[in-house]
Image 1 (spheres, rainbow, N blue to C red):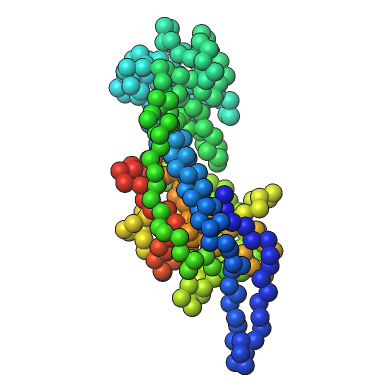
Image 2: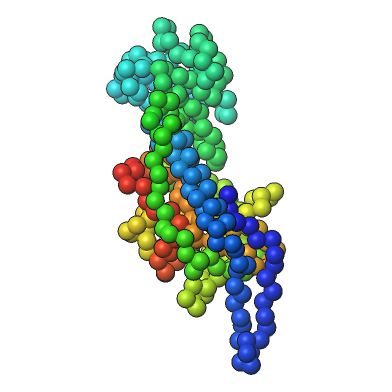
Length: 300
């Protein structure tokens, strides 16, 4: 749960008598409440690991037949403890996927019922391994393997965060683009995802002005901002982190709270698909706030 700011900060036109621009301070927050909100947010991030860490594989699903089983050389190779050499195949025709079991494969559908013949389905199970058909956009589909017996489902590990520091809670002016810009954003799997760039967030750190491109989506009350900074080389995930400030109108002020900077799923698993940050969203200052990297995680 993230602190909200619905009050528009008014920018003063004159600083003292020098005519300089005064950068507004973000609205004050109660320290005790803020700490509780941050702890609740950390718990939410930890709970998210119960969905990401059990992912044990990912494979592209092209049109036509994609066979799966424990036999080496198949497009999808799975543990022999739960799948016969050839367990079946996914048949994709455009956006429709049918699962065809091999004779005697003992597969189940996602609801636990027996898969006794070809069936349109978005999930099939062998033992504790659930194969899910995932739509990744840009006409791409993947088969993702999830281990329903993974220890992280019941007891996900804690993710270390920097201590709260009000210095990293800053006012940011939203400078909207004349028109939202559809953007094909590269992702970690060599493809693209569709986003809409709606403007830039302009803010200051230690007196230096910086900008971040923000993506938006109609109907959402927050922005999606990916950023890189020098901590990626040491304490935080090497790829990037994300902040989600509240939506405001052009020229109005929102809060960029880097204490709530979170990791994308690909920080924890190499079997995920994540967008990559815009090249211009590389900050020169080390943002020592928000989530750190998870030791031992095999991400990108």
